[in-house]
Length: 449
Image (cartoon, rainbow, N blue to C red; front, side, top):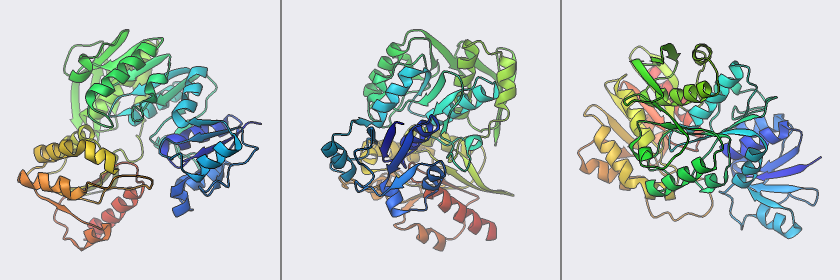
């Protein structure tokens, strides 16, 4: 039996591949510095329930019985796991390299875009499952309806050759994927400058053997050279255009090519995610009526507009928004729901914050209303090497200069000494699952205030 060790197994992308690989009959083990700090972490418990053995990230989990060692791109080559694998001559692959091999084995749908990948890929897989297409899934976000005691919700094994993956552009390896179909929803600043990401998306589309579903309203995508494209849209003409759109606080109603749809997620950005799925499934020959019936039951992805409190006029929301584009979508959605919002943002990593600082400042300066307030938490640091030459205070300084209400708190517990002045509280940021626990504590305080 093939034995694979995954270093960095706690990350969303690696845990998905590890769980998927285990379900396919491989012997799987792994390590993560996050689990060294928190051995009782939820993801660790679920992986172990699946029979995956978790080791300290000190090299002890790797021995000559390992057939392959797969490393998260966040794990440095100086890490004890990497050093041990190299010394023993164990074959080494990065997570994207190993995922590329899986992609090549199956009829893969690669879901790309700088925003909405997790929701779109999870929604598409859920719809395929409801439509009895028996899909496989390797995602980043955790689909609520896929969660079990042994599955965090970010992978699925099915009996068909269909595989849906979240194709992230962050490390540049998206250009190595050769999928059967692709979705490219949007293009904006995130891990790389727009021009660099555009080149990656063009290469992905060129590597796609079938059609490519793209966002027809996205101005940056419109300048890309993408062949075999099928477009979806809201504001412009396309093959799959949403009409008769009605946005409600917690759902969206719309029509596509004469068929009525009910999406149980709010906001224009989620409508785009749904349209991408509708377009791809319809192009594969699935009737719109069947897609509509299945879509109604989709309940979303964890940490994507998760509601922790909805009492009278008080809301507490937890969300994964972390780049300017995602944050704008989140704030626009909240503006349609609540008059007085306190936004609590934790930037994710020193490198991304350095790249997106001006975007953050512009986004908050333009979208915070006079009745809103912004609290910035310290930059999230997951360990490893990083130049800590930027802080949340640098963002706050720019937002304050624009005349908006903003402050920085150095410790989350400091929040609970502040008065409850706003109707709604939105906690958001990437990578740190403990933000959900923070949102739950805020919900308890608001409810009992």
